[in-house]
Image (cartoon, rainbow, N blue to C red; front, top):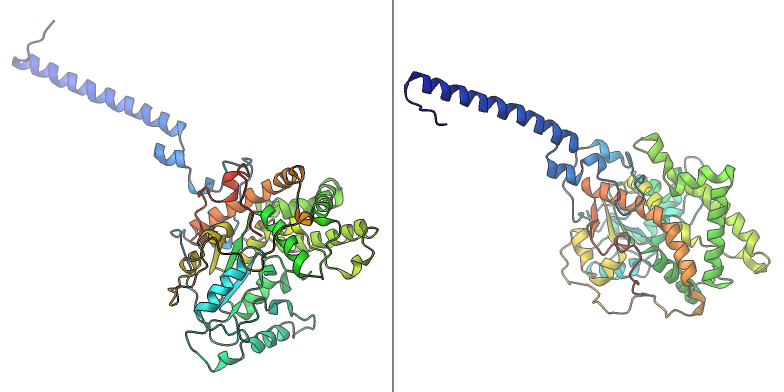
Length: 434
């Protein structure tokens, strides 16, 4: 049936029809909006909801869903900045370091230091002292805790009081600063001491895939150091350390220690901007030394005169990195494997335009490297167990680095890059670098 639109009646019918269509569209639109808001996050466009909001951006999709860090940094109170690809190293006046390569051992700090030495006239006693270790020279005498630290740096950087040349860069490249080779509490830890001595210093961390780093470090000790206990070979020592991890996890009086250090429970539960994870580490290392010395005493009678390296525990980078970031904002984190592929990336993340274009070419033998022998071998079964142990710490590290990237801390490569170890999930065999 057709309706003629001519005349008053036809016009009124058209007006009524238009009003009905508008009312229907408004009602349907409200229902559709309510449906979309219910299906996706409130107040978000569907595409934004698919990506997740800022509070969920720390969730690790490749790890257990409960691995989310709340208030992992005191910078969370500040406005979120755009991700940064580099930091600017400032020349600091006085006998204090402007740049500290604080970790990790066998992560490429020697290569990075050589590049800096070629580019700058490093004020470090002739360029022969890479690992100064001055941050360990703290004293227990009240009021004189930092006197030896300042004297140590003055001995190496003695000319900086009168020489202000831009071609001199004071550098301390002690890679075990990350976790500290001393059982000092947080108040006397390397990050705390450096924040007092040189609060404007730039700090760089080169982090290497944990299992590769452990093998390389043991191999380095085997060929160059006599102070470390190397009895039984690397595999036996790793088994003993994994036994220690299982033990502290089961026992009631050490379970909280395990949770505080390895699972960052104090960060998640207290929801505070700071969490003293360093003292968890000191207690854990003390327990570790007691356990290992008792286990190895029958096998190695001279163990009391040897240093013991906690290979697995020191490769759980998150608690150490978290502590350092409580004291420093001018920080860069580089994946060691990414740096090894193209060492000129160091200049990019440091914000330095090199005059000599100093870089180590891909394929060039690594510094202080030695071929692996049988003492550094790990069976497939042991490596599988190690991957399980490192799954949770790596998930925490990824969440934390993602948070730092959003706050403007320089992280290279980007967190979603396929070159990070957690993306590969250890499925591909990593190239071995001594």
